[in-house]
Image (cartoon, rainbow, N blue to C red):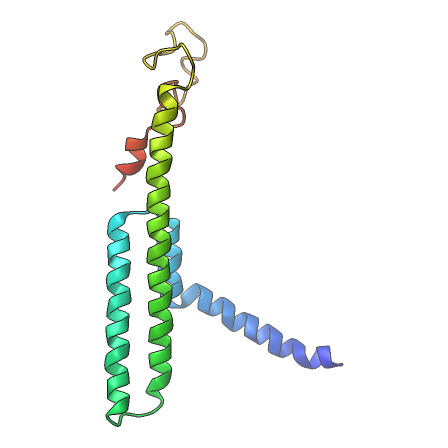
Length: 154
């Protein structure tokens, strides 16, 4: 019986949560940044946005201290929460940038010693049946694509 009473509350909370995950601006920003390849200028933009949110939060809290409406405390909480989310996203993006750079250095290091005793300048012979089947950028010199092509994307 208690389950039948709690079911509408649970489903409405789940519906609101899903709506906020899809349409809330900070969640849209997080989805966009996490789906794009990590860039250092994105980190700078995110930290600038977090600082702007903190400054706005401070201005609103000063207005509340000077006699503005008390309901603005909710806005201060939302601004603080969004600043924390954006700053955390910036830190995670820094980690992704570092991991991407380390991964590229690792793949470059691997290419020089991928096959012991074989030069890095080995190309498949033109008469070889496998010569046509190697995708661009995945030959013996690069082993899965070059690091420069991953870093040079716009």
